Image (cartoon, rainbow, N blue to C red; front, side, top):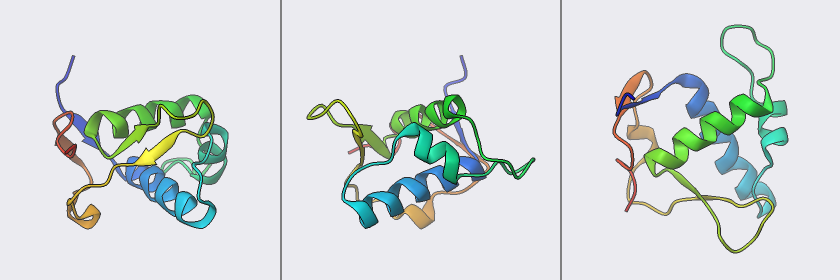
Length: 101
């Protein structure tokens, strides 16, 4: 298993969507909402819920978001960190938990 997590443009788009959604609504999006609002770079079609789930899992492994243990539904949270999100480079590999506190 590759120890690096490749931070692609689609992962950045999903992360941005999650951050914006939480700011606007005060709760997290579901995988279906993520899938229906993020388009694939290659086909310009919305991504599947399965792909949204895999991308979210990579973002969790990077330490950029986490799943809350407080609730069973809509449990994604943005990790409070000193990392400037703009400093994360697209098309670069990062170690798991590289951005966790």
